[in-house]
Image (tube, rainbow, N blue to C red; front, side, top):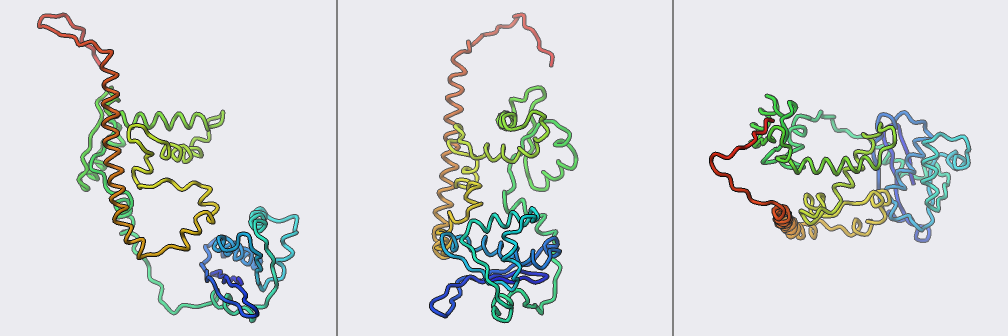
Length: 315
């Protein structure tokens, strides 16, 4: 059952056992400003879309019957001159064995009550200054060392005051010697190589391809650390876009999720993450030692004595 109001939409997932209906899941959410301007029929369609996406893992491979108080929904499925938004919704409907049945609001009180429930609580404005100040610190942690070139966007009074506030050491690369910031240069070179292979001939879609380039770079295996950068930071593999789009792939894990059991496993998981990072440091050190060994094989040590003529390189 599903229903929509001017401010919220709601749905109830149930299963019939004989003549009695048993509830499996309640779901509801509020509408944003754009969705509040939808017509009554579009809001009813949006409710069905919301229910199908919310209950996707329950509905795949089964007969789905939707009870709604909008009889026109049954005829929109065959309408040819539909809007692009409705076409996308209809394509989603075709993934399921779906049947829409008309049912008056007085007969489906559960969903109708959820969408029209009122709250007596007084609205309270949230203070946005706390999340803005703590967001970076909570999600990514504050770095100890910040390495950059000598650009004015890094070397200025504002940046200096910011780094001093959070006790971050600022190291700048040597002028005309970018090798001192080699890690950033190598990363930029790889991202640039990915962009060159994905951009079109006009080179005007760089901003559109940048997210995919970063995704490929962060999930690629790096020999110096022995793992991908994403696994180094978060201790797990990246969820592929297909797993996010088709949520039924991880439905079993979500249904069997237990908070107490997750808490017991949290501590060893943190230890595993620490072991991964220690391994990456050792792999990086071994990789640098091997690289130095092969580099030094072709270098002949030269001895200079006082009085030798030398050429001074003026940078």
